[in-house]
Image 1 (spheres, rainbow, N blue to C red):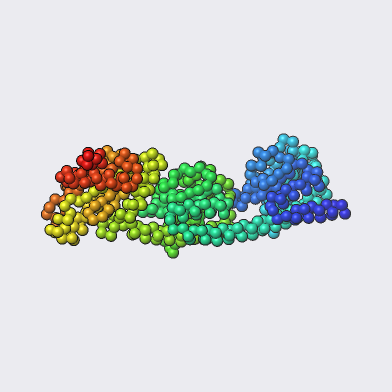
Image 2 (cartoon, rainbow, N blue to C red; image 1 turned 90 degrees about the vertical axis):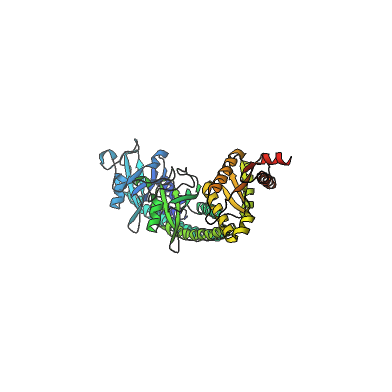
Length: 495
């Protein structure tokens, strides 16, 4: 009766909670208190590697908790393979024994099974020879049956809790991303939400660029990046590109075993790549990184694919919004930016230059005698000259430079991170290019005049800088046209 009471109490204890960690602690506490054992552990099976790892233990050095034991190896692996308890009354005489603790003299391993499938092993070691009699082994085996039920209950409960949280996460991501139309802001929001709602260490959003390369557009997390944001992954390489080419999710739970694995982060051990596809159009990849081997399960795939579908739709909406914005900021005749965009960008560039103690130059340009050209040869030809001049400017400037049609035949160019003297060289180059160009159908020479102002030397505000550049442009006009003048020359002229 005492043994029956023991089993009843033990069963009630392990079945009293659905929390996996608490169940494991209860199992080992009962083994210690009821069976007078000081060295025990529960090892769980990693399905992706087919190896058992120590999930929790009592009376063992912490460093021993990192060992992995394959099925069929050692006392533990043999119990899992045979699906029955394995007892070594004298480990020195058992060829299956894998030495772990010098004091161990006997060991028993009991498989924890659910529906004939081994999910873990209860391992108990003793410093005494033949420490477990048949009655104790029978009791431990019966207790292990109850422990297995408790583990399965905890697993199902955890799975249900996880699914509930995943559904809540999907709903939250859908609500919060559909309202964001700025692409950079959207991608940052996606990284934050996925990192918050799912068990991952780092989130990356890579999008296809114009050359069909995956480019890192946003990432967030605690891992150490190898590739910087904005870096393009080599064509046809990496898990992300493989996922995109296949059009389906790719999961690797041990990236160290992959040949030619292209690592994005130093600590990555598991990676999931989910393609971002919107109505058949491939946009990019949602990449999820973990420093834990075997981090991703089959249950993780559907919710994260739902997240990827939501993100793909939001990214496409952001693209549409971006295109609409571009149309609003483009000059209809020349295709370059308009004055509205100039006003927005100059404020941004002044703020950046002020914050980082940088420089900024403005070039104001006017086509000489443009009214006379229009009057003599017609507006259609004048429009063509405006288009050709705009194209020439775009070909000669850097990507970071911003060329805008300021109004009529006047252009404004923002030259970030550039001194006034260097901007003068840029303006002079543009003047020479236009002067040397032969415009089709225009029998007269077309030239430009320019004025250059520099932040902060010629002004700290938008109005001061534009006024200084305008004054320099006026000085060029007064000086005979087809020339470039700095703001300092304008001050001398007005003086």
